[in-house]
Image 1: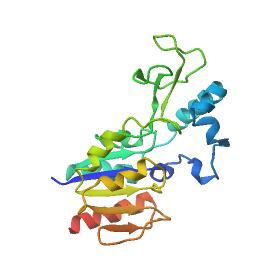
Image 2 (image 1 turned 180 degrees about the vertical axis):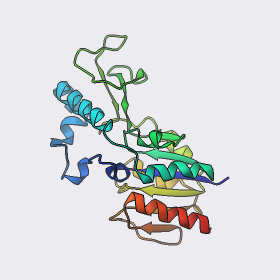
Image 3 (image 1 turned 135 degrees about the horizontal axis):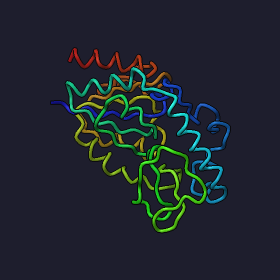
Image 4 (image 1 turned 135 degrees about the vertical axis):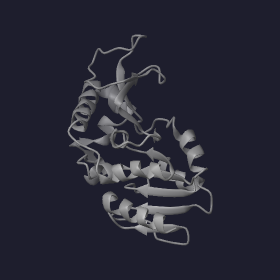
Length: 226
């Protein structure tokens, strides 16, 4: 069974109604990302940061997986599928995909601000004064700018075994996630789906300038031809 590795970014969830900060000149829901997505921002104004992610968590309950998420889940009937996502939502899980690696954390989890390994499910608001067992403030389980990406090594190992790589809704300009394309075997077929792609087709790369929902349908047709 061929192994398909899928790299997904904000573009796949945007079609479900989840806004992305890169669509608004570095503003995310009216906030500078440095205020709400860095350790320094959290240290300076923890209440603002907690409230911001509480709102994102509430928003997540109002959206649903779209056709692209559902189509990826369906691929598991024919292929081994590993999804590596930069997104912090749970839309891949809700669509039915079973092998998902979250590079940048998960909105529906929290962790201790002291112990990075103290991670727990989180479906309600996090407030100032919510403490871990060791007495430290709980924070969102999100990898902020400037922090290590603990799942990167696992993602690299997954990419090294790819027969097919599908990239959906990510500019491939944010590192270290953008480096993952360099770890797939040289002969791996790559499909790059993005409405405004910054990559051109070549011998191994097929660029599909479409939104995620349209693009993945085209890729599936190509996979069935091969």
